[in-house]
Amino acid sequence: MVCVRCFLALPLPEATRETLADLAHALPMGRPVPEENLHLTLAFLDEVTHDDLERLHEGLEAMCAPPVTLTLSGLELFGGKSPALMAILASGADALQGKLVRAAGQAGIPLPRRRFRGHVTLTRFPRRMEPGQLDKLGLFLQSEAATRLPPFEVGHFALYASHLHPEGARHEVLAQYPLEG
Image 1 (spheres, rainbow, N blue to C red):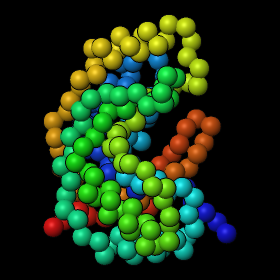
Image 2: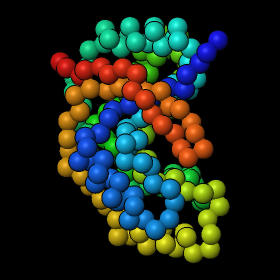
Image 3: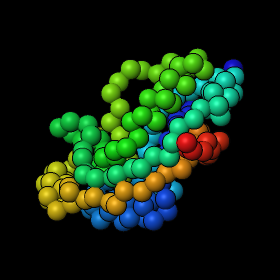
């Protein structure tokens, strides 16, 4: 049985992706997420079968949800004492995220129950930081942690396939779903 690694996400406008990519590249460490991969993940589906994807697609096509107004504000580190990534927090997508999790469950794709913490990953860090890197990271956050972008509306979400490669993941849009009404 062939499975595909998939997720549901809100794509970001080009100008927003450019701003976030510039911010990530200003950090003198880590591996910035490629600009074309910047998005807000709403539900990571993991490996799913084509049959599961077809059922999910049918459910998502029938779903009604209004456009989402996103606010990206505040840089945060994820991963504890040894941070794994830096992200900008995202608010405004909680209701849509809940609907998508329910739609996945109805399609037979069980998702782990955990609190949704909207964010856009900007930079990934190595497992072990070299001496002085945490200090550089701290200085960067002192000057940039309060970063806030103007709110913007997103009129659709997408189902993506994620293909893993040694140089990083490549994302492919499998389907897009309008947010209206």
